[in-house]
Length: 125
Image (cartoon, rainbow, N blue to C red; front, side, top):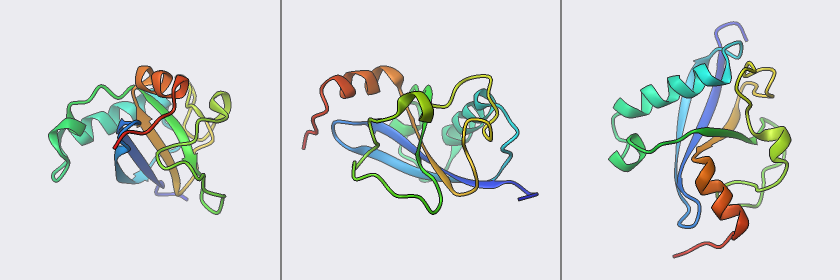
């Protein structure tokens, strides 16, 4: 796709409370690095209209592929806890090398929150 990919970024504010917001990015270059894309998303959400302030100011630092176009979706409500070594995007890679393609959905979250949730995956109401 010459003019870029469509990537949905799921901003995860809380795993336990299932507090997340999907944000769609159009014309994403898959040749940019993971760090560059993270910075682009951070800059965008800081000023995006309609996004609640807790999401704008949150210290998101890690991305993980949650869904590929035409692939099976997970039954997890927020994000799958499996296959981190293959699905967490690594600094220094391009998005394409990390496995991101057109219509990929990625989760954006704080690694510390994810570690705590993964150790004790309970949801609160």
